[in-house]
Length: 287
Length: 257
Image 1 (cartoon, rainbow over the protein chains, first blue to last red):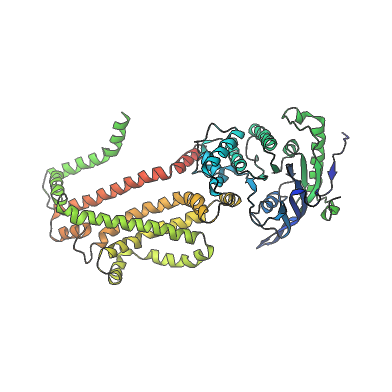
Image 2: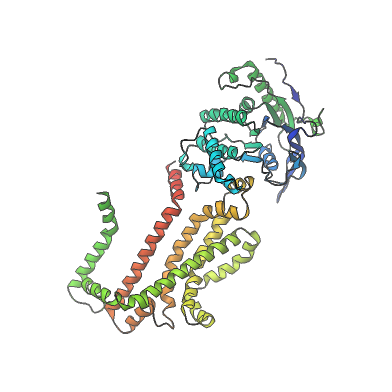
């Protein structure tokens, strides 16, 4: 099947100075272990504009989680930098919220659903009335307003991840980072959660960076997909997903364009696994 | 019906033991083992009077103060040590040394250092009760989930709020296991601390009875100790049920899978 190539960049796409909300520049991370140094991330450069929904996809072991932790300020990079709204990220920024893959361990089991969602706000000193409103809104947005008094472990995996998303949403971040959030939930729940992310993104206008190893998921969700190479990681390609804005699990996934994009991303990842690296990408800067 | 059943479980075995005791002592009288009826009258005569105020309550007060102080100190120190890797490495051998010392051998030392008073007795109780709480707190803090840590950090929950909202609740199951051990150690040390250079208290009184061959009275003192132990255990379980409701529920769910 010969298809029209998607609009793409070899290497990460960058925006002109001052237009990016989140920019990653020449990010490199080397782990020092007893057995020697491991270069997890070699050189990553890309930008996220305000309000974008971008998926990061890459083969397993391609340093996706490392990259996300560096962006979230949970881990120091070896060199290069991450800037949020022009400010260099040195620790977890206030305008960022993270949704982890391990929802069961990320939610506090001793707190009820509302308390979990409320905790970051309480800690930030948000007044009680406003806290109550934000928590109620967030729980409603994820469709969980009927179980506020439950403990997270009384809920199914998918519902627990909804609580984690509600907690992130209530925190009112400008950037929402998600680290393979649906890797541990079953396929049907996963589809619901994907649609939930799209609707939350649209409703709140938040900027989302969604890390996944699932090619279909990245295309279905994203407005843009950044394909990572295998480790040591660089950006393999940065493509625009030109699917209609209204996405539907059945309709969208059966569009010919969806299949084309899927083929394209799949082929790129295969290339990445075989060690093909777009060398020019390392030094590539914006047009 | 349900209440009756739980009462049956609660009192069944004690009643059987009581019946057995009664049967065993009703035939030939034994100087060293009183009958249940004799023990009951002695119990009431001996303890429901002046001794309640001069011996029983002061002993219980010292026990409560000692155990509570050991719990608070153990948790505070445990948090400090558990959260600091260097401190942990430095203190670990020292803690092992002190933990290995049987508190009774410290009684003469504490007498010299603190003096012969309530403070000394409380100090003996603390010196023994603190270890399970301290070591369990260190362990509970050390084994905290890294994902929980990252969650706290990414939401800006740091410093004292992190201890309050994440570390303490998460370490509570381990800490409670230490507290449970501390309670039984506390009861033992309460008695021992009153056996040396003392003129009142449960331990002192029981030893007095032993030395003067007041056998039924001695037995009744042992019963008092047993009853205090039961009361402590019930209080502990009640507190644990409230504090660790989430933990037991979580375990139940995990085991059901």
